Image 1 (cartoon, rainbow, N blue to C red):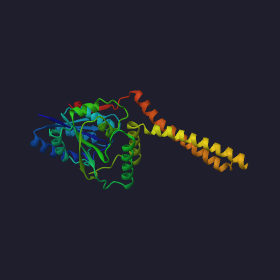
Image 2 (image 1 turned 90 degrees about the vertical axis):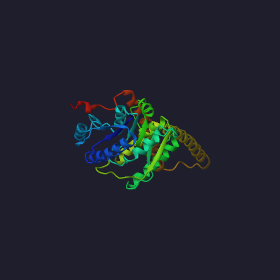
Image 3 (image 1 turned 135 degrees about the vertical axis):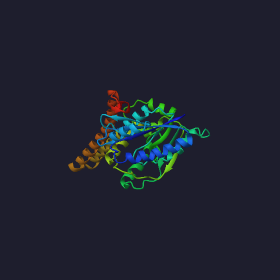
Image 4 (image 1 turned 135 degrees about the horizontal axis):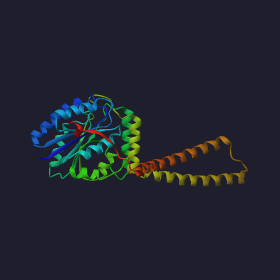
Length: 317
């Protein structure tokens, strides 16, 4: 019997988790009857402050398909994803959120796609074709991010792509072989290669609870992706430096010629101050770009673990 692992990162999902568990249980039972496959549900509690861990303990007692990991603190979704993938033992591994924005009913279509020998694919992933219900400013910056990544990165990141996907064991093992500390899973899923089939669906709002992704967190996450999968910002810094060196040389020539021909001194200090501030801002901007790459390198060399496990289902007697 083939085994399908369902990995579900959770952070303060006390309100959504009961609804998710009921819905996913229905879908898994239907798939078990139709395809004759087994399941394990791996929940990763990312240091939740509510009763998420308590619910997982109860589910484990009544349902042996439930497995879980609880972190010692909040390490972030990327750490939760890699922890769940490491724990998964299935022939196929699905990754999804607990807020029901990822429709569990699509799992059956994903499994059909992966087992269809005529398609020969290793991943069935999902992408949103609309952002209905999402703040317009967030949607705008999200689209800009995907357009930017398409231009500056060799790794394709599909617009609207979700983490919600099902993968073969071969692809999961390839992802696990990447031991980066600064992880950007959407880029990693694409970077490892393998043929991917995309399922499109309209945006679905959270069933309960509140989103954990503030605008600042999304902005930081986008910087993570840019730095992790493109060196274009470093080229921009270098190009900007060369450009301003050329401009400064030309301006020096203008000032010298102007003084020799017309004897006109350079205009007052306001323009000088503006130029100094502008050049200083460009320099700080370029230093900031270098600092981002240096910081990522520093964190990688520290070789700290991605997460620390406080408890798992094996601790329940």
